[in-house]
Image (cartoon, rainbow, N blue to C red; front, side, top):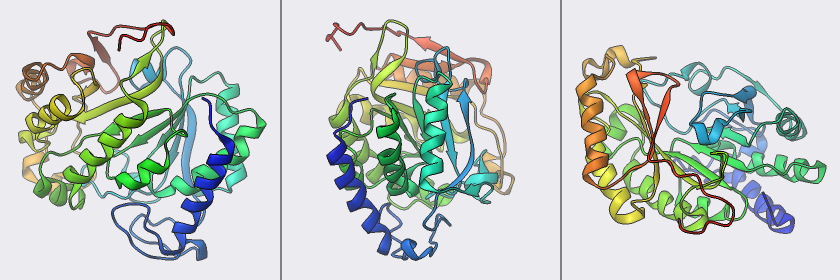
Length: 318
Protein backbone atom coordinates (compact mmCIF):
# COMPACT_ATOMS: atom_id res chain seq x y z
CA UNK A 1 0.00 0.00 0.00
CA UNK A 2 1.41 3.35 -1.07
CA UNK A 3 -0.95 6.21 -0.30
CA UNK A 4 -0.31 9.88 -0.98
CA UNK A 5 -0.99 11.15 2.52
CA UNK A 6 -1.79 14.70 1.44
CA UNK A 7 -4.33 13.38 -1.04
CA UNK A 8 -5.83 11.14 1.64
CA UNK A 9 -6.27 14.15 3.92
CA UNK A 10 -7.87 16.20 1.16
CA UNK A 11 -10.29 13.44 0.13
CA UNK A 12 -11.04 12.65 3.76
CA UNK A 13 -11.99 16.27 4.45
CA UNK A 14 -14.10 16.45 1.29
CA UNK A 15 -15.95 13.23 2.10
CA UNK A 16 -16.49 14.23 5.72
CA UNK A 17 -18.16 17.48 4.69
CA UNK A 18 -20.59 15.45 2.60
CA UNK A 19 -21.98 13.96 5.81
CA UNK A 20 -23.53 17.32 6.67
CA UNK A 21 -26.23 16.59 4.08
CA UNK A 22 -25.39 12.97 3.48
CA UNK A 23 -25.03 12.06 -0.19
CA UNK A 24 -22.25 9.47 -0.13
CA UNK A 25 -24.41 6.63 -1.47
CA UNK A 26 -27.35 6.32 -3.89
CA UNK A 27 -29.84 6.87 -1.04
CA UNK A 28 -28.82 10.54 -0.71
CA UNK A 29 -30.77 10.81 2.54
CA UNK A 30 -29.59 14.41 3.11
CA UNK A 31 -29.57 13.99 6.89
CA UNK A 32 -26.91 15.81 8.91
CA UNK A 33 -24.77 12.97 10.16
CA UNK A 34 -22.26 15.42 11.61
CA UNK A 35 -25.04 16.13 14.13
CA UNK A 36 -25.55 12.38 14.55
CA UNK A 37 -28.74 12.31 12.49
CA UNK A 38 -29.47 8.91 10.94
CA UNK A 39 -30.84 8.02 7.53
CA UNK A 40 -31.44 4.71 5.75
CA UNK A 41 -28.23 3.11 7.05
CA UNK A 42 -29.12 4.00 10.65
CA UNK A 43 -25.59 5.28 11.26
CA UNK A 44 -24.81 8.75 12.52
CA UNK A 45 -21.39 10.33 12.98
CA UNK A 46 -19.53 7.41 14.53
CA UNK A 47 -19.20 4.08 12.73
CA UNK A 48 -20.65 1.01 14.39
CA UNK A 49 -18.50 -2.12 14.39
CA UNK A 50 -19.85 -5.60 15.03
CA UNK A 51 -16.52 -7.40 15.10
CA UNK A 52 -12.95 -7.39 13.82
CA UNK A 53 -10.72 -10.40 13.36
CA UNK A 54 -8.38 -12.33 11.07
CA UNK A 55 -10.84 -14.03 8.70
CA UNK A 56 -9.91 -17.28 6.98
CA UNK A 57 -13.15 -17.84 5.04
CA UNK A 58 -12.78 -15.34 2.21
CA UNK A 59 -11.51 -16.18 -1.27
CA UNK A 60 -8.03 -17.78 -1.07
CA UNK A 61 -6.36 -14.71 -2.60
CA UNK A 62 -7.89 -12.54 0.15
CA UNK A 63 -7.53 -14.81 3.20
CA UNK A 64 -4.25 -16.44 2.24
CA UNK A 65 -2.50 -18.34 5.01
CA UNK A 66 -2.59 -15.65 7.73
CA UNK A 67 -6.13 -14.42 7.29
CA UNK A 68 -7.74 -11.23 6.08
CA UNK A 69 -7.92 -8.43 8.65
CA UNK A 70 -11.67 -8.09 8.55
CA UNK A 71 -13.71 -5.30 10.13
CA UNK A 72 -17.47 -5.87 10.05
CA UNK A 73 -19.39 -2.59 10.05
CA UNK A 74 -22.96 -2.47 11.33
CA UNK A 75 -25.65 -0.96 9.13
CA UNK A 76 -25.95 -1.06 5.35
CA UNK A 77 -27.24 1.04 2.47
CA UNK A 78 -29.09 -2.00 1.10
CA UNK A 79 -31.94 -3.91 2.68
CA UNK A 80 -31.63 -7.48 1.44
CA UNK A 81 -34.53 -9.58 2.66
CA UNK A 82 -32.26 -12.68 2.68
CA UNK A 83 -29.19 -11.13 4.35
CA UNK A 84 -27.27 -13.70 6.37
CA UNK A 85 -25.59 -10.90 8.33
CA UNK A 86 -28.91 -9.24 9.18
CA UNK A 87 -28.22 -9.12 12.92
CA UNK A 88 -25.66 -6.36 12.37
CA UNK A 89 -26.43 -5.15 8.84
CA UNK A 90 -30.17 -4.66 9.44
CA UNK A 91 -30.75 -4.86 13.21
CA UNK A 92 -27.73 -2.78 14.18
CA UNK A 93 -25.86 -5.15 16.48
CA UNK A 94 -22.45 -3.76 17.31
CA UNK A 95 -21.14 -0.65 19.03
CA UNK A 96 -20.08 2.82 18.07
CA UNK A 97 -16.34 3.41 17.94
CA UNK A 98 -14.22 6.54 17.76
CA UNK A 99 -11.99 7.06 14.74
CA UNK A 100 -8.85 6.42 16.78
CA UNK A 101 -10.24 3.10 18.00
CA UNK A 102 -11.04 2.06 14.43
CA UNK A 103 -7.49 2.99 13.43
CA UNK A 104 -6.19 0.82 16.27
CA UNK A 105 -8.29 -2.12 15.03
CA UNK A 106 -6.48 -1.83 11.70
CA UNK A 107 -3.08 -1.72 13.36
CA UNK A 108 -3.91 -4.71 15.59
CA UNK A 109 -4.90 -6.75 12.57
CA UNK A 110 -1.67 -5.82 10.80
CA UNK A 111 0.33 -6.80 13.89
CA UNK A 112 -1.51 -10.14 13.91
CA UNK A 113 0.00 -10.83 10.49
CA UNK A 114 -3.07 -10.36 8.32
CA UNK A 115 -2.50 -9.94 4.60
CA UNK A 116 -4.80 -6.93 4.27
CA UNK A 117 -7.42 -4.75 5.96
CA UNK A 118 -10.83 -5.96 4.77
CA UNK A 119 -13.57 -3.35 5.23
CA UNK A 120 -16.91 -5.19 5.10
CA UNK A 121 -19.92 -3.01 4.14
CA UNK A 122 -17.90 0.24 4.06
CA UNK A 123 -20.11 2.36 1.78
CA UNK A 124 -22.08 4.22 4.43
CA UNK A 125 -19.02 4.86 6.64
CA UNK A 126 -16.47 5.66 3.94
CA UNK A 127 -15.67 9.17 5.31
CA UNK A 128 -15.16 7.79 8.81
CA UNK A 129 -12.87 5.08 7.44
CA UNK A 130 -10.76 7.71 5.70
CA UNK A 131 -10.44 9.67 8.95
CA UNK A 132 -9.27 6.49 10.67
CA UNK A 133 -6.75 5.81 7.90
CA UNK A 134 -5.37 9.31 8.48
CA UNK A 135 -4.59 8.20 12.03
CA UNK A 136 -3.39 4.67 11.25
CA UNK A 137 -0.98 5.34 8.40
CA UNK A 138 1.42 7.59 10.36
CA UNK A 139 1.54 4.80 12.98
CA UNK A 140 2.73 2.30 10.40
CA UNK A 141 -0.28 0.83 8.63
CA UNK A 142 1.04 -0.35 5.26
CA UNK A 143 -0.88 -3.45 4.12
CA UNK A 144 -3.43 -3.37 1.26
CA UNK A 145 -6.91 -1.97 1.88
CA UNK A 146 -9.86 -4.06 0.67
CA UNK A 147 -13.16 -2.28 -0.05
CA UNK A 148 -15.64 -5.15 0.43
CA UNK A 149 -18.93 -3.76 -0.84
CA UNK A 150 -22.43 -4.88 -1.76
CA UNK A 151 -21.98 -2.84 -4.90
CA UNK A 152 -24.69 -0.20 -4.43
CA UNK A 153 -22.34 2.69 -5.03
CA UNK A 154 -22.15 6.08 -6.67
CA UNK A 155 -19.37 6.01 -9.28
CA UNK A 156 -18.37 9.60 -8.46
CA UNK A 157 -17.78 8.57 -4.83
CA UNK A 158 -15.71 5.56 -5.91
CA UNK A 159 -13.66 7.93 -8.07
CA UNK A 160 -12.68 9.83 -4.92
CA UNK A 161 -11.02 6.66 -3.57
CA UNK A 162 -8.45 6.39 -6.36
CA UNK A 163 -4.99 5.86 -4.90
CA UNK A 164 -6.43 4.94 -1.49
CA UNK A 165 -8.12 1.58 -2.07
CA UNK A 166 -5.91 -1.25 -3.32
CA UNK A 167 -8.49 -4.00 -3.78
CA UNK A 168 -12.18 -3.82 -4.63
CA UNK A 169 -14.08 -6.94 -3.54
CA UNK A 170 -17.46 -6.07 -4.96
CA UNK A 171 -20.81 -7.78 -5.38
CA UNK A 172 -22.71 -7.87 -8.62
CA UNK A 173 -25.94 -8.91 -6.98
CA UNK A 174 -28.57 -8.28 -9.65
CA UNK A 175 -28.85 -7.89 -13.39
CA UNK A 176 -32.43 -6.66 -13.25
CA UNK A 177 -33.68 -3.51 -11.55
CA UNK A 178 -37.06 -4.95 -10.54
CA UNK A 179 -35.35 -7.80 -8.69
CA UNK A 180 -32.96 -5.39 -6.98
CA UNK A 181 -35.83 -3.23 -5.78
CA UNK A 182 -38.00 -6.15 -4.66
CA UNK A 183 -35.38 -8.01 -2.66
CA UNK A 184 -32.93 -5.26 -1.61
CA UNK A 185 -34.85 -1.97 -1.92
CA UNK A 186 -32.01 -0.87 -4.20
CA UNK A 187 -33.42 1.30 -6.97
CA UNK A 188 -31.26 1.47 -10.12
CA UNK A 189 -28.84 -1.09 -8.68
CA UNK A 190 -27.68 -2.62 -12.01
CA UNK A 191 -26.96 0.75 -13.62
CA UNK A 192 -25.08 2.17 -10.62
CA UNK A 193 -23.33 -1.12 -9.88
CA UNK A 194 -22.02 -1.40 -13.42
CA UNK A 195 -20.88 2.22 -13.55
CA UNK A 196 -19.07 1.84 -10.22
CA UNK A 197 -17.37 -1.33 -11.44
CA UNK A 198 -16.10 0.41 -14.55
CA UNK A 199 -14.50 3.04 -12.30
CA UNK A 200 -13.02 0.42 -9.98
CA UNK A 201 -11.58 -1.43 -12.96
CA UNK A 202 -10.13 1.81 -14.34
CA UNK A 203 -8.40 2.50 -11.02
CA UNK A 204 -6.88 -0.84 -10.04
CA UNK A 205 -7.35 -3.14 -13.04
CA UNK A 206 -7.27 -6.93 -13.14
CA UNK A 207 -6.29 -8.67 -9.91
CA UNK A 208 -2.54 -8.85 -9.40
CA UNK A 209 -1.82 -12.07 -7.52
CA UNK A 210 1.68 -12.76 -6.24
CA UNK A 211 3.67 -15.99 -6.25
CA UNK A 212 2.09 -16.99 -2.92
CA UNK A 213 -1.42 -16.60 -4.34
CA UNK A 214 -2.23 -13.36 -2.49
CA UNK A 215 -3.89 -10.42 -4.22
CA UNK A 216 -2.00 -7.16 -3.95
CA UNK A 217 -4.15 -4.95 -6.16
CA UNK A 218 -7.18 -5.19 -8.42
CA UNK A 219 -10.85 -6.11 -8.62
CA UNK A 220 -12.58 -9.32 -7.58
CA UNK A 221 -16.26 -9.57 -8.46
CA UNK A 222 -18.55 -11.65 -6.27
CA UNK A 223 -21.75 -13.05 -7.72
CA UNK A 224 -24.17 -14.80 -5.36
CA UNK A 225 -26.35 -17.24 -7.28
CA UNK A 226 -29.97 -16.86 -6.13
CA UNK A 227 -32.86 -19.32 -6.66
CA UNK A 228 -34.92 -19.07 -9.83
CA UNK A 229 -32.26 -16.97 -11.58
CA UNK A 230 -33.29 -13.90 -9.58
CA UNK A 231 -29.69 -12.69 -9.71
CA UNK A 232 -29.71 -12.54 -13.54
CA UNK A 233 -26.40 -14.35 -13.94
CA UNK A 234 -26.29 -14.40 -17.74
CA UNK A 235 -26.63 -10.63 -18.14
CA UNK A 236 -24.02 -10.02 -15.44
CA UNK A 237 -21.46 -12.32 -17.05
CA UNK A 238 -22.15 -10.72 -20.42
CA UNK A 239 -21.46 -7.27 -18.93
CA UNK A 240 -18.21 -8.42 -17.32
CA UNK A 241 -16.92 -10.00 -20.52
CA UNK A 242 -17.98 -7.24 -22.89
CA UNK A 243 -17.51 -4.08 -20.83
CA UNK A 244 -14.82 -4.93 -18.28
CA UNK A 245 -12.51 -7.79 -19.23
CA UNK A 246 -12.61 -11.52 -19.86
CA UNK A 247 -9.60 -11.69 -17.54
CA UNK A 248 -11.66 -10.40 -14.59
CA UNK A 249 -11.52 -12.54 -11.45
CA UNK A 250 -14.95 -13.76 -10.39
CA UNK A 251 -16.06 -15.48 -7.20
CA UNK A 252 -19.16 -17.49 -8.13
CA UNK A 253 -20.92 -18.15 -4.84
CA UNK A 254 -23.30 -21.02 -4.09
CA UNK A 255 -23.68 -20.20 -0.41
CA UNK A 256 -27.13 -18.61 -0.52
CA UNK A 257 -29.20 -19.35 2.59
CA UNK A 258 -32.84 -18.25 3.04
CA UNK A 259 -32.11 -16.08 6.07
CA UNK A 260 -33.87 -13.14 7.70
CA UNK A 261 -37.16 -12.46 5.84
CA UNK A 262 -36.57 -14.86 2.92
CA UNK A 263 -39.30 -17.22 4.15
CA UNK A 264 -41.84 -14.52 3.24
CA UNK A 265 -40.92 -14.92 -0.44
CA UNK A 266 -41.69 -18.39 -1.78
CA UNK A 267 -39.35 -18.04 -4.75
CA UNK A 268 -36.27 -17.54 -2.54
CA UNK A 269 -37.30 -19.59 0.51
CA UNK A 270 -34.85 -22.40 -0.31
CA UNK A 271 -31.23 -23.12 -1.12
CA UNK A 272 -30.21 -23.13 -4.77
CA UNK A 273 -30.19 -26.44 -6.60
CA UNK A 274 -27.21 -28.22 -8.12
CA UNK A 275 -28.53 -27.43 -11.59
CA UNK A 276 -28.97 -23.73 -10.84
CA UNK A 277 -25.33 -23.50 -9.85
CA UNK A 278 -24.25 -25.49 -12.90
CA UNK A 279 -26.22 -23.07 -15.06
CA UNK A 280 -24.34 -20.16 -13.47
CA UNK A 281 -21.01 -21.82 -14.19
CA UNK A 282 -22.13 -22.42 -17.76
CA UNK A 283 -22.87 -18.70 -18.13
CA UNK A 284 -19.28 -17.90 -17.12
CA UNK A 285 -17.98 -20.38 -19.66
CA UNK A 286 -20.33 -19.06 -22.35
CA UNK A 287 -18.75 -15.61 -22.14
CA UNK A 288 -15.17 -16.84 -21.86
CA UNK A 289 -14.70 -16.03 -18.16
CA UNK A 290 -12.28 -18.44 -16.49
CA UNK A 291 -10.40 -16.57 -13.76
CA UNK A 292 -11.60 -16.87 -10.20
CA UNK A 293 -13.22 -19.31 -7.82
CA UNK A 294 -16.26 -21.53 -7.50
CA UNK A 295 -17.77 -23.02 -4.36
CA UNK A 296 -18.11 -26.79 -4.48
CA UNK A 297 -20.89 -28.65 -2.75
CA UNK A 298 -22.70 -25.43 -1.79
CA UNK A 299 -19.94 -24.96 0.78
CA UNK A 300 -20.09 -21.80 2.84
CA UNK A 301 -16.34 -21.32 2.85
CA UNK A 302 -14.91 -23.81 0.35
CA UNK A 303 -13.54 -22.22 -2.76
CA UNK A 304 -12.02 -24.06 -5.70
CA UNK A 305 -9.76 -22.21 -8.11
CA UNK A 306 -10.65 -22.02 -11.78
CA UNK A 307 -7.65 -21.25 -13.95
CA UNK A 308 -5.73 -19.32 -11.29
CA UNK A 309 -2.34 -18.16 -12.50
CA UNK A 310 -0.21 -16.51 -9.79
CA UNK A 311 1.99 -13.75 -11.15
CA UNK A 312 5.31 -12.47 -9.93
CA UNK A 313 6.13 -8.84 -9.29
CA UNK A 314 7.93 -8.73 -12.62
CA UNK A 315 5.10 -10.33 -14.63
CA UNK A 316 3.03 -7.68 -16.42
CA UNK A 317 1.27 -10.08 -18.79
CA UNK A 318 -2.07 -9.59 -17.06
